[in-house]
Image (cartoon, rainbow, N blue to C red; front, side, top):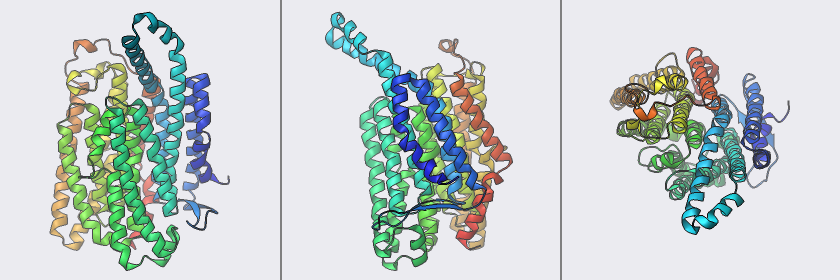
Length: 520
């Protein structure tokens, strides 16, 4: 099959209007199943080249920016596969959640109109603006935006050119802004602007670094930059711009301020997609842009990244312990997990880097499972407050089991993928500390293990308060969520266990690539 990666990236964009019109004309089922089928097809054709080694596609583009291409290598393939697997699974989960959310918005709008115009004319207004028409239009817009966001994330990790990377990086942020502004909670528009400001300021800083590199090298292509090298006078400037820009995207400590607000206000499918895939794109940028293109600067900044990651791990873990809103708890958990990733990126070892990339895989699977749990609870219970829950394991057994598997994954407990990821990452960090004889790295390694205890504390505390203990009276009639919710959860729960038992599914691509990067 030709143009595999071109299809995988651009079919969701080109066919997003179809998803909209199907939703508008035929309703949520048609839009959801079309979107699911399209992403399943794109995921399937993209997985095939992975087993044949590095796969590239190149296409003519403007001479101003260089060549347009896609690269699926040992670094990009785990990110690309997980992004589309998660996106595909989340389509089905989105359907009942967004139908309930949009229906609720419609009812709120009708109630506001009643209060404004009075009971006499409100009935006519409700009849003229039917729920079905409103729902179909909104669900069509949602799935169209969903496809564009998935396409933007995949394009970013497959890009072979700095400008191409930036364009796709921006494309994935724009649908997220509209999804938050249209279907968020509470002060959704203010929070959407907060998200827009932080993420786009980070993107602009990133672009400044790209322009400094491309204009001085004479090319924006990754291959040309690697071949010709970057002039010494701009190396530090470019590295700092890349670190700050990607640090905002990963919500690292100090640059994390936007994320708890966004996760508290965003609809749960967007939270799952953002935490499970979009945040990890920032980690991919560190690998591709800093470690591969700027190896000398990476060596210089590695220890600082290691310590920055450590601070992020501990700070966000402690903050998660203090939360009652389950989505805000998982927001701080995501920040903490990005700290783990940055800790591994700063390890300066093959195993540390390999473990960090595998941690993206495990975090994505585990965190999406936990956000699906949140969505199921919101649908069935109607609250996000942990103190108002308890004893739900008896009422929602499938959700409870899948959530527990997700919790084990985030905590790094076998037989889930989280264990292999964390074990490999910490082993690599310890290896570097011993080889360099670095006291600072040794202390950081010890404190990193302390951070894992904090992670276990807030995750187990959350699971205990939600699923165990006495069932409150107002939850007596709670039932399990629909198969649209539970089936995707079971798929991801099974996947994280399979990867935990057989991690070479990804390590066979990751470790050889990291050996090449580190010159081992």
